[in-house]
Image 1 (cartoon, rainbow, N blue to C red):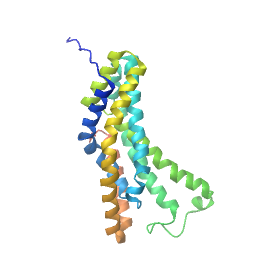
Image 2 (tube, helix red, strand yellow; image 1 turned 180 degrees about the horizontal axis):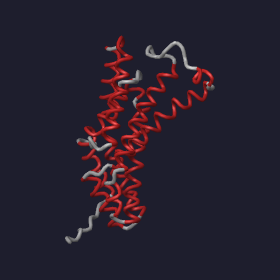
Image 3 (cartoon, helix red, strand yellow; image 1 turned 90 degrees about the vertical axis):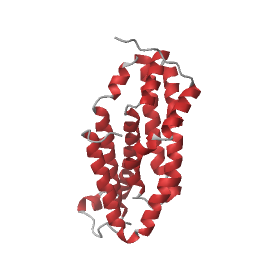
Image 4 (tube, one colour; image 1 turned 135 degrees about the vertical axis):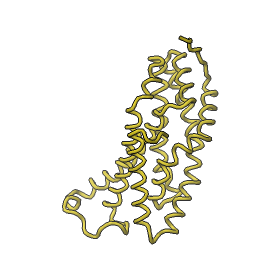
Length: 236
C-alpha cells in the first residue's frame, strides 16, 4: 500500500485554492441547479441575495463541517462524502426548491398562473402561516442545496480534507474549510448576482405573456435535475 504523503496548507493557500475552483468548475456545476430558480423571480439583481445567501451559507457550512471533521477524525471523512447519501441530499433539496416555488405561486395570489379560486385547505389556513411556509421553505431548500453541493467530492476538496486531516485539529481543519469556502463562493456569487440574475430577469420581461409556462418549465427542470441527481444519472 502506497503511503499518503501529508499535505500542509495555510489559510491563504486554501483561499486561493477555493478561488481557482470557484472561477471555473463551480459555476458550471451550480448553473443547472440555480439557473431555473432565477427565471422564476421578478426582482432581478436587487433580489439575487435572497437566492444566493442561503445557497452560499449552505456551501460554507458544508466545507467547514467537512474540513473540521477531517481535522478531528482523519481521512474517513473522504470516504463519507463519496457515499450515495450526498446525491440524495442534493437531489432532494433541488426537488424541495421546485415545490417551494410552486407553493409560493399557489399562495401569493399575484401570479397569472394562480387560480382565482383557492382550495378550502388554503383558504382555511391563517394567512400568516401561509406566508411563513412560503417564505421559509425556499431558503431552507436553497441552504440544503448548497450543503449538498459542498459535500460532493472534487480534487480541490480532497486536498483540503487531506490537509485538515494532517493538521489533526478541529479548529485548524475548520479554518481551512472556511478559507476554501469563501474563495469558492465569492466569484460564483458575483457571476450569478450580476449575470444570471439579470439574464433571468430579462427572460421574464421578454416572455411576460408566457410567464406561467416559463415558471412551469423551470419547476419541471428542477424536479428532473433533482431526480437525476438523486439516482446518480448526473453528477454536479
